[in-house]
Length: 302
Picture 1: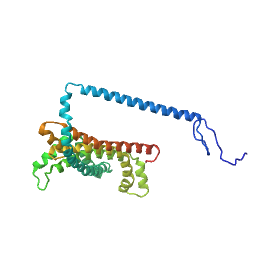
Picture 2: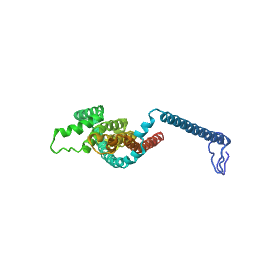
Picture 3: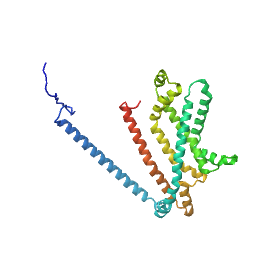
Picture 4: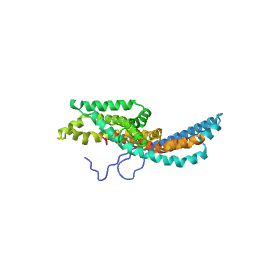
């Protein structure tokens, strides 16, 4: 038996870091890193060149079309854009308020519907049937038709104490439709939790409700966060549909300005404002999805 007074150092030929101090990368590792850097630079250059060529081709195709001059004056007028931007931004505040209020209501109602659809036992059959019928109906009904039915149908009933505010009615239609979609997202998350999790919770003395609240729902919600964020992105865009009811949001503000001189640049401004608002939410959704995928690959998410 041979005893060593210091740390054992091994020379590796696969480029991995040997134990001990005074580390020096092997020649193979240096060559491999150089190859990766070269390939990355080449891929970046090719992507930049192809993007530039595509942009140039599209520019000449669009600007060289026979109707480009008229289209530019009608849809891309700098003067009308300056006039429309303050009004569009003022109307956008209504869209943001609708997003916050309707988003919270959609998440709450969607969760309740999902829980109702996953309740076990024959005694809960009527509740499951009602939740299923609600989800199937409003997922199949186009949002624009739901808006028209609520915005114009509810005031026609002349019910005592029922509001006729177009913002409230339009927001209610959004909640009715999107809660059905979100309910299916939550239900998919609940059903993705393995039954052994519920069984283990029951074996520890938790009731069915406690097992659902403390064990199943936390796991289910974590798994469907990216899908929920995507639904909220869609809701943010669809808040512009409340302009059908006459609510002065960003879209209706653009419509008012465009109707004066029949120049449609305000619509383009409103569209770009929504795009500018949506892109950060979309990138945040992508970041959350990638982060959860990494945690799941490392075993950090149950």
